[in-house]
Length: 215
Image (cartoon, rainbow, N blue to C red; front, side, top):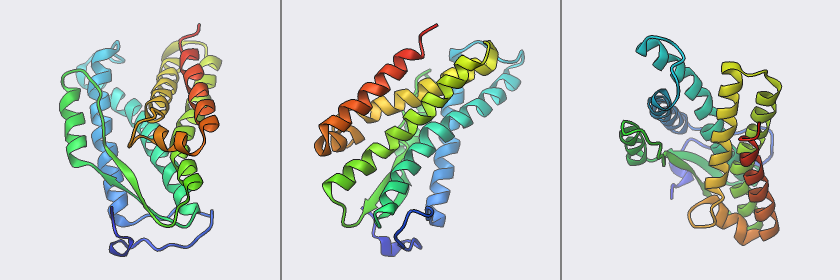
């Protein structure tokens, strides 16, 4: 764990805004760049080309994957951070350099496996508060996934609908993965706090994910 005294972060309770240290912003930025590259490498080989030339196609997928990473990964972590700071806790994201390196290496073999980092939390947190903090990340993915799915259905086919549908699926997959009830994943803490909330959120995530395959 990290000592909040080692960080320029200063606590001030309340819901008004999130507070970031320079180190945290840097590590979020590095994680976004690496994950975007990894997703673009995989997606540019999985799916039909967007443009004729390899370079233009890869650049296009970089732009698409940047949106996927910013919504699926960054907003998930910020959900944890916002919930934790609203309870007066110290909360900062820290990247896993080995996890990021592994994500990039595995991408060249056509797979996505990422353990980019996590939000570390310190403070007097109750079991209920820890459960709420833990469920906040998957709930953000659910909201983004639902909005993207509705938008995909509203668009009459084409590339835009495809990207929106992919955005929905990635967010819902992340929600489901993080809700697996085994430590250190979010699901274990949510289930320990409130099984009803756990099964409601996990069930809704599964239903929404299956809905992305409906015509």
